Image (tube, rainbow, N blue to C red; front, side):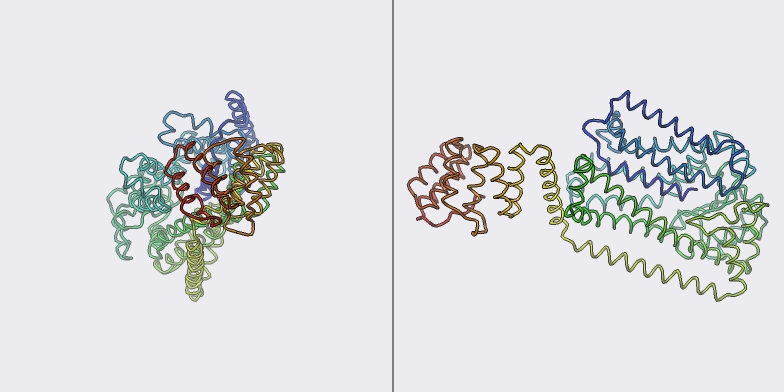
Length: 607
């Protein structure tokens, strides 16, 4: 089930990407190892229980068990990341500092180990149901190669991103630090990868060119007749070549491969083989492969653009504070977990339902192309019946990315009887694509118009406020956190809130010079003149100067004297600030202002 595994691997990658590396693990190294080993043994026991002999006798039951155990493997892996803090130990791997991608690579390797446990216990049942004779090594290697091909683009792109970060070129570093620099570089590399990916995949699978002979020449003539070119027609040795399937890979004819398993060649006749090839040609003629690429790119850009606004909305709600109070976890941990949950939900909905809808209907379009190319539905229907097996064991097996074989057979027969259904289906797909891309472009434009830098700054400020308030809740007697909250409100221009927080800090620490000074400065220089209180500011500044006669505090005192009409005392305080400072230029400018101007004119705010 490679398409199911695509979603599982996406989920695993998202878990790894959204969970940070903790400063300290939840358990010690030996304890983590024992818990990890115990979980793996328990998971292997589940696999043995569900696949125990005589095991599932129906294909639907086998694939259902495999799906449930694969989902359980994802959950098991999530426990490793979130409860056992396994990324902490992966970050200790040699070379992980220079190449951070080693951490997620190790995580994916751990998840694949869980899948190997599933496949190992499922092999006897698979052989029994499908009449196969796969050896353990071949069965595990074939499943692993399928998943490695799914992972290959991510593996190559992430290592390329790491290497770009290590480059000594300043221009590349500047581009990487720009908001869209890294995504654009990765996109460029991804587009280049698309050209060579089919070649890499066929080599990883051990594909070999179909030998020259009458069969190959007939297939080449058939492809030329339908104006579709392939770089090579390859034998696809999937599961020892016993599977009855075919596929097409590559966007350009110079990098496009037609893959056919030996099992299919040995099972079907010439007309049936041409109907299968026509089906694959249908994918090319209907441009399904570039459409798949657009679906993936659209998802990547949408999540990249939407992540910051979604974070800002989440931070503006009271949900984070409530979850922090309920769980006792840090804001970073909760944001990471909730971000993972939201992103996983989007992935499942996008790929499982939306992308799945188009995949099912694209397959139906390819079936209809084979019907038109061959002239009648019987050859492709016979192929489907052979794939289903003599007892029809998988004829009605449901799938989120394909209609069942029975549904495809019935639809082909109906279209052969009523050709108007063919036009209706193509029109349905065109309209669905038009609506999808219209909505996608609208969402991209909406998110693109958002002021990203402003939204990022607001999100940062909101997160800082949440963290400070949580620290106040945990240590209400600590005045420093009240001061930090007041400083943050002051920076945001929320002066009333800042005054309240400064007063709370002074209640806890009446003699804190920085709190006295900062509140005095706010009462003197806030943009909102309604909060100005010069006499109170002078009182606070004098107390602060007695406690800590530092340059910045004496400067506040000078401004307070000035605003209260005491020029000589203001000049004296400014001279004392200049004498106590390491930054003579600023304090000299402040002194010159006091000497030039007459009170009670306000001074410019401190730069």
